[in-house]
Every structure is written in C-alpha cells, then in structure tokens.
Length: 328
Image (tube, rainbow, N blue to C red; front, side, top):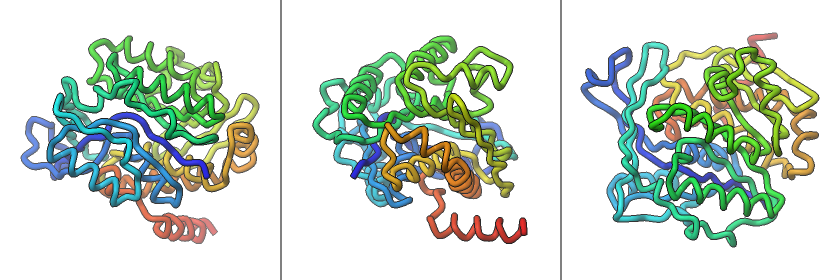
C-alpha cells in the first residue's frame, strides 16, 4: 500500500497570544509543531493514510518535542535524523486581525538544512509511493540536493511527486533566487499547488489564466490553485473545476494550505491512485477532492497552529453536512 513521504523542514511555530500586534510588540507566544512538509504528513495520517517525514532535527528539546508530536499524529519519524551541528528551526509569527501572518525565522542554518544526499535511503521507497515537498528547504544547502535524490528515486519507482512552493521570501537572500529555484523544481512534479498570492510572483505573468497555463511544463499533470476563502480550482491541461470554498471565523491561517494539500493527497492515497491514473481520477473526482480539501483548510484556520489545528474526519463530515443542510 502506497504511502506519503514528506521531505523538508520540521520546526516550531511560536504563535502569539495577541492578534493585530506587530512582532516586536508581542508579549507572549504559544509553542506549536509545524513546518509545511510535517503539517502535510500529519494531515495525511489524520485522514487514515500512512505517512513519513524525511528531515533532520537538532539534538535539543525542540527536536524532542517535534518528534513526540509527529508520533502522536500517527506520522512515522524513523527517517528524521538528529544532529549536534545545528539547532532545530524556530519560526516566530505575528497575526494580523484577519488571521494572516508575518514570520521571523531562526535558522542560520538550522538542522533540517544539513540533511545530506547519502542520508536519504533509497530503499525506504516502494513502488507507487508519493513524495511531497515545498520550497523553504530548497535554499542552497545539502537538503536541496537531498530533495533532488528523493525526487529521482520516487520517480524511478513510478511514484507521484507533489510540490507546494509555499513561498517564504524572508528565508531567501535573493528574491529572484527563490523564484528561479521554484521554477527549476516545478517541472519535476506531477502535482503543483499554488496560491493566488504566489502565482504572479512565480510565473512572472499577471494574467491569471495565462499564468496557470504556463505551469504545465515538464511532468506536471495537475495544478491546484487556491484562493483562500474564495475557494480553489483544480486544473489539468484540458480541464478545470472550481469549488467555492467555505466562510468561517478565521483565527490563524497557519497551516491552512498544508491542511488543504494534505487532505487532497489523502483522498488520492485512499483511492490507491497511481501515476498512470492520476489525471483521470482528478478530472472525474474534482468536486469531491476540492470539497474535502477546502473544508479541511477552512476548519484549520479556526484554531491556532498547523498540526494542532487539523480537524478530525468527524469534524469535517459534520461541517460538510451542516453546510449542505444550510444550502438546501
């Protein structure tokens, strides 16, 4: 049975107790497990599928905390290595009144960036496994090359590659390096998820439809375009489906996009979707995929944090049932 491997950063998100306060003025924070790849793995596990994280953490209390939380979330942590060479990454967040965020990252470098190519064991991957990654750990480092190896191995085993650029410009010395690296990795993926506030930056194209079309290069078969509370679309080269999304009381948008793509991938895994059947399944089940993913993302914004805010399957089903009754 195929599983999801998420490769990249695992970190602590320090979420402020106050909203609408600049980061320099925040008085107290709440510690939450995070890192986009870890959030996605936790979502996949929470929705009944098998997931593992490939990363490296410091030999410190924060690393212990993250491993413990991932295990509690049902994520396999056997491929998370530990090191004394660097500390576990930290991210301090300030929340605007609408739940949007500003970040300040502590990693120069952090332990995750030190994962070496030869520390990625190609024997852990089975035929048809999925690999998910983001751009935060694609800065020039050993970890970038570890990503390249994992992608090559999963592709050689007819697996599915999923990429969420998840742009975090403060982590890049040069904005154009960020854009160039994302464009370098997009053609390696079969699925790319991109948000409305990233599309023009990444593609350099202001026209939305033209920008989305430009993403179909290399091995890309499916583009997922998210627009926050305005819903999401899923596109193939010859089709497009839209789901309007859900209005909720937003507390914190941290991890909402990760919850969305984690939910989306969990449905593919649940239905044993192989690379050869990916496009056909997505076209035929677009509404089901987007409805579940949008609900998961929306409910995640109603609590603070990423992993700790993920709704249960029961909560998603109750929410969708209530939404259906309200519409009718």
